[in-house]
Each structure stands twice: as C-alpha cells, then as structure tokens.
Amino acid sequence: MTKIQLPNKKQLDTARQKNVWDFGNAILYKLCKENFQHTTDDHILTKVLFIGRIYAAAVERRKNKSSDINDNFYTDTVAPTFRKSKLDDKLLELKLVMPDKIENIKSVLQTHYYLTKMLQKITALDKRSFSSKYLHFHFPDLFYIYDSRAVSALRQFTSQIPMDLKHILQFENIDIEYAKFYCKCFGLKREIKSQLNIELTNRQFDNLLIEIANKQNRLKLKPL
Image 1 (cartoon, helix red, strand yellow):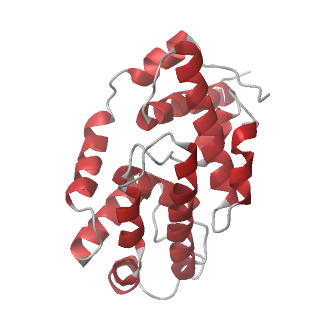
Image 2 (cartoon, helix red, strand yellow):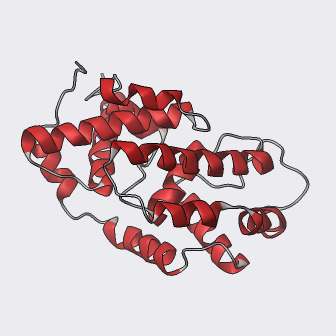
C-alpha cells in the first residue's frame, strides 16, 4: 500500500482560498480558451511568451543558442514549429477526455511528451516544465504543473507511485519524470477526495504544493 501523508486542514484551506495570482491566471486561461489552436503566429507567440515568461520557463532558454536574437528565434523558429506540428490534433483529442480517469492518463502524458520532444528539437533542452505549464492552461483539469519546487514539495506528502498506477510508467512515448510526478499528484489528490471528502482542482493542488515550497524556502533562508 502506498504511504501518503495527507495535508492538514490549514494547508487545504489555504490552497482553496483566492489569492493575488488568480486574476493573472484567469487571463491566461481565457487567452488559451479563446485562442485554442495553433494556426496563426501572433496567437502562438503570445501564448508561448506569456506562459513561458510569467511561469519562469521561457522557451528562448536553449542550449543550441545561435546568433539569432530572441525575437528572431520566436518568429523564425518557435511559431513555425507550433504551426506545422500536429499539436492541435492531439489537443482536440484531449477535449474528449474526462479528468481523473486512470484510463485517460496515457493520452495526457503522451501529449505532454509530444510537446516536450517538439521543443527539444529546437532548443536542445528538456522543456518538461514549460510543456506542463503550457498544456495546463489549455486543459486545467488534465495537466499538473511541474517544476522543481512542486517536485520537492510533493515529497512531504508522498514519495511513491500508487500501485494501481505503476503500469503507466511502462507506456511508450511518455516523459518518465513527468509521468512519475503526475501519478503521485493523481494519487494524492485522489486520497484527499476519498479520505477528507475534499475535491481540489489542479490549480488548487498547485497552490498547495507552492505554499509548501515557499515554506521550505523560508526555512532554508532563516538565520541559525
């Protein structure tokens, strides 16, 4: 049986409260909802730039950085890459997916993998975090936001993948690190609902992890 430490009442109450970031996040959700597809460069670049830079995962950070300035990289490389890709086909398929169903995790993870590999080809870097954030704003009920802070905070509650989700790691065309993180988030969120009768949205779940991460950081900075 997977060992899980459930959040306490204060942590859950804080995660579900409105905060100063809700207004900005609502703008990004609206932006992606109203400009869902990747057919025009201005819509593509606005979404990629806003999400990437606001969420500290800018696509212009790349290993194979040429003499191109960042503006040229976005207009000459990033926009055409999205426009010519099959990302919209995969996103349209996800519109039929019901959240919180184990049988649908595979298609969610494979879409994340597709975007990650697509960006790796033009940056020579892992864009796992950006991909999770970008896809989250298109499908807030399907994708968990991944970054190093969330990974660290999640360890306070669980370090194991639920037994009934371990088979997911055997799927092809998934990013294994995001898959592990995803399964742990899925399992913890499920236990919160089952044991405490509290159903968090993925945004509220992210609020929970970020609050834990901020507390961990404050403890590190606290003078001895």
